[in-house]
Image 1 (cartoon, each protein chain N blue to C red):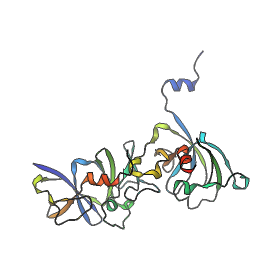
Image 2 (spheres, helix red, strand yellow; image 1 turned 180 degrees about the horizontal axis):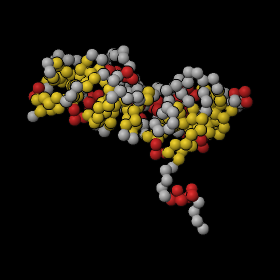
Image 3 (cartoon, rainbow over the protein chains, first blue to last red; image 1 turned 180 degrees about the vertical axis):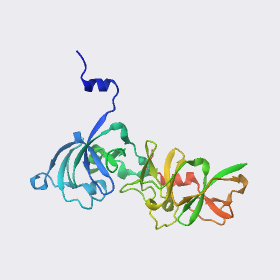
Image 4 (tube, chains in turn cyan, blue; image 1 turned 135 degrees about the vertical axis):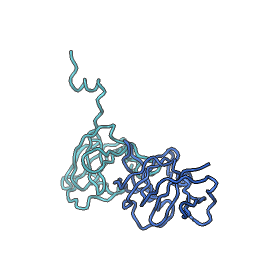
Length: 139
Length: 142
């Protein structure tokens, strides 16, 4: 029995891909692993807990002309978090090897929730977040 | 015995730096400002497949500059201890070989993270102490 193309690629050491849900920002974007995003809801359809504010959560200004609002439900190790985000949500795939570690010992705790930064994604740079670290900070 | 010094300019101030610490001199290069970080380390820059910290020397050295580091025309990539950093600067001069004996304790200059100075082309420059600067920048254990 032969291997599927995907399995062959894995055997050949093909780069690991990372599927991300992209939240826009004013100067850079944030990427959340798609496996940690349980859903995206229009505010009018949301009947759960009062959502956290994304800008407050990551300490950054929202896109200046963002009108679209969505409630993202994130799955962390500790809990499910509802977060209100502004701007157009996108989906992207990057190579895991393109996510570069940040010098967090110089940048401090505020970026400790980030696994790294990706400069090679189309558009502005992408800060890849670890939702469990966000969860630990909020739960 | 000589030592190599590169002169860099922040606003109107020239500062000397041990040239052996300089890995590359870049032109004006965009870097990524990050939210919620210290003003002395305001963002990161992509360099040779790595994300390196950008250090605002004007802030770190207490110059009280009103200029944003995003507006500086050049950037030095330096290796301070185990860290590779980008220092946006306004200008850089060629490396000068000076007598090691001409490095003196600071008298005419005053700069945070500097305790010595040198004369280069008739100008007295404070010499940046990279170890003292790094000690002030580290926020958590690497």
